[in-house]
Amino acid sequence: MVSRIIPVETFDLIIFGGTGDLARRKILPGLFKRFCDGQIPPGSRIIAAARSEMDLGGFQEFVTEAIADALGLPEPDQIADFADLLDYVPIDALSDQGWSELAEKLPSFDNTRAFYFSVGPSIFEPLAERLHRHSLVDPNTRIVVEKPFGRDLDSARDLNATLRAHFDEGQIYRIDHYLGKETVQNLMAVRFGNMLFEPLWNSQYIDHIQISVAEDVGVGGRGAYYDKSGAMRDMVQNHLMQLLCLTAMEPPSFFEPDAVRDEKLKVIRALAPVEPHHIVRGQYTDNSETVTYRQDVEDPRSTTESYIAMKCHVNNWRWAGTPFYLRTGKRLKARDSEINVVFKRTPHLIFGPEAGEHNNELRIQLQPDEGITLRVTIKEPGPGGMRLMDVPLDMSFAEALGDDADTPDAYERLIMDVIRGNQTLFMRDDEVEAAWAWTDPIIEGWEARNDVPKPYDSYSNGPTDADLLIERDGRYWRGIGA
Image 1: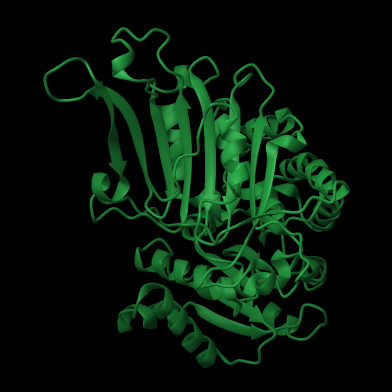
Image 2: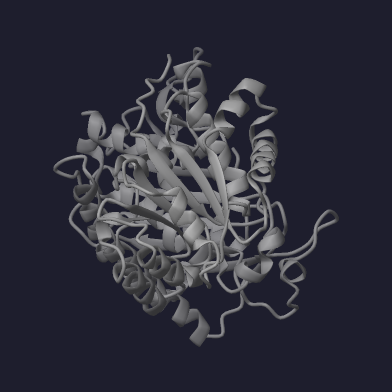
C-alpha cells in the first residue's frame, strides 16, 4: 500500500535555532524526507537563523551531515536539489544584528510564511517583537513554538500573553510531537471510524485504561533542565495529558481544529484532583553499567522525580468509576509507549471456573513499533474440557500496510500541517492553562509534604510502590516492552 502524497503550498520556513539539536535531529531530516516524497513544491525556501557565524556553504554541509546521521547517506542528486531550497542568516534575537539581512531575503508575502521558534521560551518575546518591527509578518504568518509551555500556571499565562501580544491565537502552533505520531491519530480513527468500538467506549464496558511512556535512557545531557522539571512537568503535563484527552474525549461534531480541541479541553477540566496516595514518584539508581539520577544531574540531594505513576479519574458521565492509570519514567527496562484499554469481564462466565477469568484488551502501541492489537478470548486447542486462552488480533502497521507504506515522523507531519494552516494536532492556549491548573496542586502537594522519590533499579519496571498502587485495586500493569 502506497500513501498518497499531497503537496503543500509553496512556503518560506524560517527556523530560529536552525543549527540547534532539534533542528539537526528532527526538523531538517524531516523536511528532507518530505522533499524527497514530493510534498514540498519548487520555490519553497528553508532559512535557518542562528547566532553561529556560518555561510551558506557551511550550513549546507551541516544539513548534509544531519541528514546522514538521521537517515543514512543521501543520494547526491537529492541532497543537491534539497540544498537549493536552503539559506542561512546569522542573527541575534536580542539585538538588531542580522534582521535587515533576513528582511532582504523575504521581500514579499507571496509564499506561505512560517517561523519556527526552536529556541528557549525566554527568547520568544524579543523574536516576536523584532519580527513585527522589521515588517516580517502579516495576518497569515504562522509561528511554531516548542514546549515547555511554562513550568506552572502563572508562567504559562505569561507566555501565552506574550505570544498573544504579537500574534492571534490562530497563528500560534504549540507543537507536541506525540500528537503527530501515526498511531495517536489512528486512535481517533479506531474510535470514531468504527461502529465496533465507540458504543463500548465508556465505563459500562471498560474496566480501566493504562497509559505508559517508558524510556530506557537516563536524563543524559539534559540534566540541568530536567532536574528543574521532573517527569511531571516534562512528560505528564503535556505528552501523557494529550494521550489521555484523545482516549477520553467525546466525539467532536467535525474533524476540524477547534471542535477537536474543545473536546480535549472538556476532558482536562473534568479531571478530578489526585489524592496523595494515588501518586508514586521514583528516581533511578545505578547498576554495574550506569550511574544514579543524582550523579547524572550532579546534585547528591536532588528530590526530582525521574518516574511517576498515578491513578486519575475523569468526572463525567462517560467515565464515572473508570480509573486511568498513568506512568512514565526514565532508565526503565525498555523504550515502550502504549495505551491499554482493558475491558470488563463477561458478566456471567458459562464455562465454569476451570476456564479462568479473561479480559478483552485493546493495545495501542506508539513506539517503538506502531500498531494496534485487540486481545480476544478463544478456546484452548485440545480435548478435555472448555479451557480458554487469550490471543491477539494484531495489526502491525509495517506488516498490514506493507513495506511501501510511508509512515512519516511526527515532526514531518506536524510541520506540513503548519504550512497547511491546520491546527487540529496543536495545543490551544486555554488547553495549556487548564493542564497546568490541574498539575500545579499535585506538585505543590508533594513539595509541601517534603515527599522524597522512591528509588528504583535502572532498567527495571520502576519502583515497587507503583505496582502496589494498581494491585490494591485488583489490577496489574501491562509489562514494559512485553
